[in-house]
Structures are given as structure tokens and as C-alpha cells.
Length: 451
Image (tube, rainbow, N blue to C red; front, side, top):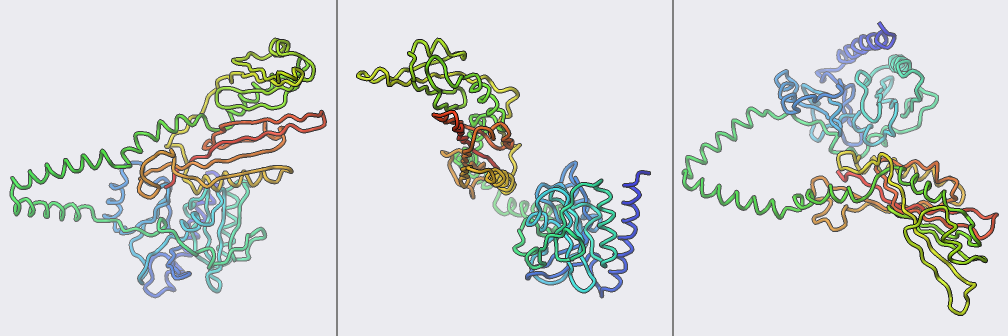
């Protein structure tokens, strides 16, 4: 048997023994510890399961209810679940501590959150990519927590682990107080009740039968016809219906995401000489399909410029003052090659807004460390701009925010854009002297699911 499996089995046995000792010291307590923090009740030591709904979610919930599990906690992406036979006493909502930390405090990757709850009682919660790790949501003594942390670290095969909390048990622990860690819980992390579907369906059926008997068949059929027509008209005018008709097409028009478009622009621009036939390149602007270059005359003529360029043109334009033929400028337009393996945006592959803002703003923060960098990132709005409805009334709205990066050209080739980020235009400003730097201005948009 592999070392990982041996360590996991050993720890599970140790955890079960510790849980039994804890439960024996609690008068008439649930099978899991809970604590009131900041006026909210949080449940610890939950038994988490990964990828719970391979089939029908509702069928699985009803099966768990038949086995005595009346409540459940579910992660936002429904990839992690814990079931409960009972909840702690007291009014108010109950929350899963692990889901709350994953939502409010997690930064992704491998993380351990350890808190001193009260004297010689510690909570230990391990997260992987912002979701609980089964078997590693624990309440116990200092010795058990340290052993669990050691076993968990061995399982990670020397991967970087982020330690957070107020326990003081780990050298690299990021300080986080208990009150701050468990403040402002989100309703998504509440413990939910598994409804008795059979009872609900039976009640609805009984009500329907009574209604039909009381009103009469003729009246029922006429009312049904009226209601169906009203529902049809409401559906035709529903902002969600209209939005669903336009959102996929609007996303297709945004262009491919990622850095592929930047590579095709640089390939086109890279073929342009800085000087040719007595003309100097001063400015280039690239859009989705073409790049336009601006030239300043030093001593040549238009014919020599246009014939001397090693890049095919789709258009050209000459600008000359009638009284000063020596002071002239020109523009040339060049087609951009099609991008290899473009990644079109679809609503299905867009992450939620909180994840998008976290990842993209972090990338911009890293870029801001470069000297002479100029950045802008607008607050996202409903996409497309002409969509009816608003972010609150639409069921699955997409949001868009604009951004701009300006810096020296050398950094552009190393810029890696996320698959929810689209580059829309690139501008290059060339210096008038050899000692100057080429400066680029890259503009685009980022997209996300609002909810």
C-alpha cells in the first residue's frame, strides 16, 4: 500500500478516536462541535465529500434524507458536500466553518486554517483550491493538530502550504484573529434543510384535487387557457428571454481571449522597418483585423516609401502641405494574420466575478511593480451595453470591464492574459531618437459571470 494511503488511514483512525473523546465530554451535544462567533453559529469537524452529485442532485438528497441526514452544506460549485443528522440549538442561521473560510479568506492552492477556539482546543481546516479537504476539518488538542498538520504536509509532496490563523503553532502562520476570520458570513455557506419531496408532492397533489373539485372542470380549463396565454406573453417580453437570445452572439463578437492576438500583432509589427527609403516609423495602431503605421519623412518620397516596405499593404495614404512638400507624413495599413487556435469566449467557461476580479487585479498589481507603468481597470458593467434588464433581475448576466496597460515594449512579449481577458487594441509610440524607448499601450476588456 502506498505511503499516502497508509498515512490517510492512520490519521482517520486517530481522528475518530479524538472525536469520540470530545463527544463524551459534551452533555447532549451533536455529533460535531459548534461555536457562536460574532453572533453566528459555525459548525466544525464536518465530514466532507468531494464530487457528490454524479447523477441527479435531488435524488441524492432524498436518499440521504431516508438515511437520517436532514441537513447539508454545499460548496458554491457543488463539488463538495457535508451532511448532518441534527443541528445545534438556538435561533439564527448555522454556517459551515470550512465553506466560510473558503469563501472569505482563501487565496487558492493548499491552505491550513488553524485557530485557538478556547484553552487547549484548536480547530484545523485544510483547503485545496478553495474547497475543504475530506478528513481534514477537525477540532482537538494541540498535539493532535500538530500531528494532523505533519501528516497533511507529507501528503502534499513538498507543495507550498499557506498557514493562516491565531494558533501560533506554525512558523509561517499569517496572523488572523478568530473574530475577523468568521465575520460577515455569506448566505451561500448556510446549512440547508433537505426538504421532504414526497410530502411536498403529496400536499400539492391534494391541493390540486380539492381545487379542481371546487371550481369545476369547465372553469379550470378556461382559467388554464388564460394563464397559459399570459405566461406566453410574459415569456416573450421577459428580459431574461431577450438576454438569452443576444448574449452568446455578443460574446462571439468580442474576439478571442488570451495572449494569442498579441502574438499575431507582434508578428505583423515585427516585419516593419524602423526606417526605410528616408522615412521614419513613428506610430503603429493595431485593431482586430489590421495594423496602421504612421511614417515621418526625413528625405525620401512617397513612391520610394510604399515600394520599399517589405510588408504587404491593404491601403496607404499620403499627407503633404501644398506649400511645404518637404514636410510630409504617410500611413500604411497591413492585414493581421488569423490567430492560430483562437479561444472564443463562451458563458460556460467564464468564472464568477469575485474570482475574476481577484485574479486579474492581482496580475495588474504585479505589473504595477515595473517602473514607468501606467494601469487602469474599470468597474465591470452589464454586457452587452444594450441589454434589457439589470444585474439583479437577469438570471445569468455577464459583466464586462475595460482595462489599459502602458509600458516599455520589452515587457509586452511576456504578458500572459487570462482566458477571460480580451485584447482589443495595441498602440506603439516610437521615439524620435535612437536612445528613446518604444512605448506600448494595450487596451481590452475582461468578462465574468455576475452570479
